[in-house]
Length: 268
Image 1 (cartoon, one colour):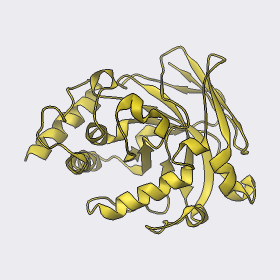
Image 2: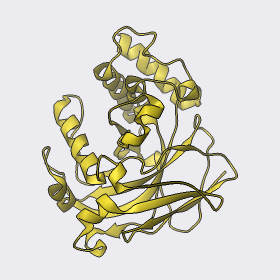
Image 3: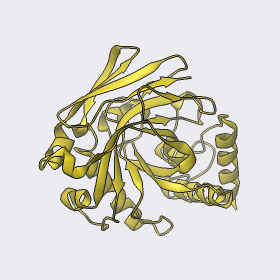
Image 4: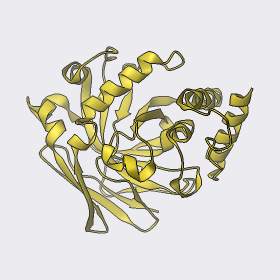
């Protein structure tokens, strides 16, 4: 019963773009397992309302940001048709209305033509992928000041707000050494033409494919979690620090070491 009450509170905060006190300090023994129960109830409520899930987001795969947030493990959440957009013409446009304290994260997005096995390694995961893209995940926090525990972020659907997906590239177009390139490419993130952050594929647990391997292992251990399925997209975690984003700003990226185009998005 307590999980259901927490799920109603969490979903209400999401739907109204309002912030609430974190659960961890006020709910005894609110751990990661309890948080995934709450997130599952919120997800089920969304499905009853007609939401269409299209994939998963993996968060906190970048160890360089763990100390900043006090979260020391990756998490995951659902993405829906209503929260994912494809940027076909640069610059794209994204409205920030309805998001709580939004921040921007440059990421690598994978689309699965077949379901990867639960214990797949990087090569086996890549064999299940038909296209790869660079994207921006706009994350948010329904807990004021981005102060929370890992369990709180799980209940908040992994802090997912929006995913903006750039032009996809077929795996075959990225070269025979794409496995290695995903681990060693670099990226520069700019706001209004000024570089704000630099990062790369190695920041994401060593490679975006390693992030997916972690997700598969977590899903395999969770009886209430649906396994990753054919047709899903997965965004694998931020390649740089997550930075606040505001209306009137244009954010852009350049990538070096992998044949994926940069992304440019104007925020309203």
